[in-house]
Image (cartoon, rainbow, N blue to C red):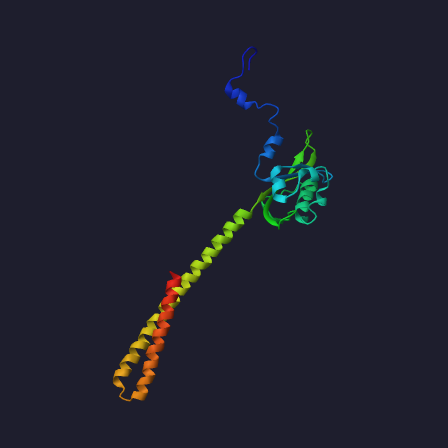
Length: 209
């Protein structure tokens, strides 16, 4: 702003104080951020990275990343390729091993880090916890399978009920025509078993609904 004039609120908002550094932004991210230098030593490990990996930054900062992620060869390989070849990975799905709990599904995105002179000085990986998404996908898949089973059961029940009604009706007609009581016993068995099958089919329809 011109000399003697205080900045307007808009100008003040556009010029953040020095304390609002990029570290504050990285700490506020919901995704985990892990950065390494050219020696593959950890330089950045934000709170979300601590939460996802169950590792303390005081334990890992300044140390080789392989000391703590030795079971996550793909993560280390991606960081190395990003660092040495400039190869970037976007939303690469992988399993990340945690210190205390079981592996968690994550999406990994990598980028290069450059110094003030534009020389590559490290690599960073942004790690997104996909466990919630995977759980939702599994629930959706389960619901789709149940819907398919219900539709299949309903169609099958209707296919059985139609000929079953014909069999029962034919047995009733035979019972009226047959004079021999010993033969009538057989038609009675047909009718009784048809009714039994019909009850099973109705239970199948209830399940489908």
